[in-house]
Length: 530
Image (cartoon, rainbow, N blue to C red; front, side, top):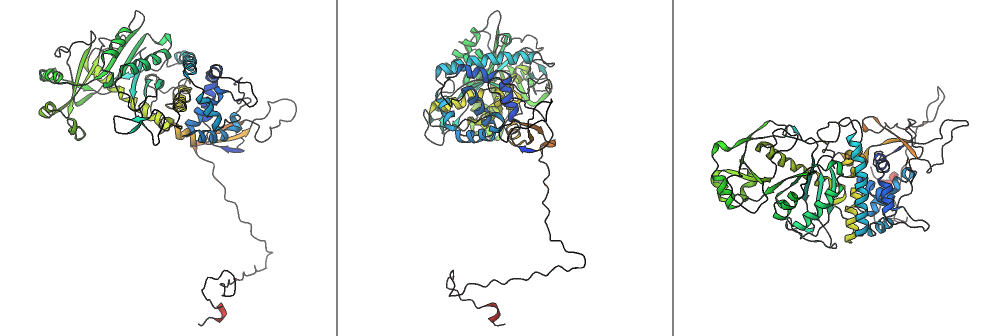
């Protein structure tokens, strides 16, 4: 039970089937936030007031997060969905209250919220380690990355239909924002995100370092011994790679895998590779991938100035129609399309064959799953920034979206990972994205009834309507109970009697002398010529 809110007091599961309510799975999200302590720590760090009608800011933020999962795209819809859940989780906050709460999130408040999230995440991850399957682990090319925490970094474009504060033209020819974020691939959580203007650079070193620092601060110390950072081609900068190499200590090992922009020197080095140097690529299950080849380019390429120990892995595939417009002269001549990955992985402790080029190529290609995280975040509110104010949009994107990370890739992040029925210890169910999590939370019905007093002397009584906490029972197969057609009541006639025949009434059309006539003359029915 939540001692601060008390909304789940005497909440039980019953099968009386008295009332039917929607959004039954919202109870899981709200209880998860309360049970892990997130609601309490947010209320402690956010501003507090003592006036009449003051709403607890921690509860307001969590209720907003639940409303976003249920489908809210603006503050008004969030308030309406909160009213729908008011019979269960208590009075809902109005849209003006939510706006004031988001406007109050300055830099100091965001820093305190980040510390609160780190405290809660340390508690949740400690519970994950105690599960029968242990902490979620990645499986790449048929090999399990034991005790490795993988962080994916990517940027995306958010279009704005109206003029918003700090919105600008993007490099794709659109208008909006260019946020940069990091996700934990093990648990599918979003660790940090920064809302940047649309004209922000894709490979700006300062932005990458700032977001990466916030993400590393969210990882508990007990899980930060072995880290793998994966970035696309925007991460191939001197400043970022040198910073990642400098993070290595005696107690922490940091490895990176980033994309690489091919230059003329790289193409000359690829042309020097003999045919027997190319090896067949591997799929994510470890089976060979026919028609795709990889090779080591480290000893052939002589580019200097990069961190010591950096390896270059080149991959080639046959040309496709969507690549014809971006081919270089060298690729058109050879008939192959090339891509290069830069990494400092010599060997990964506990992973057999981690030094092989096939494994390193599959490891970086697994970074493509970050696009699922981006799509899920956009479907769960990131694509609909609700206000013209940058502070409100940053608050909408920040604490509500990261309140427990159950809101991002569905309740699979914290709500399902803390359960003992995890599907597999090697892979997080990342597919629980916008196409599965959000409709299920929004449309799953349940039977609700008022919670009665515990068994004891006296007759059990139910609270008045609207004051009791409904209890829920999921329906089988997520379907509604069949509706019964109301039977028509027909007049009863004694046996032998004949039901009187109904007389058909004739309605006369309006005549010129009657009101409502519009100039059309109609004779009575009995006077019409036959």
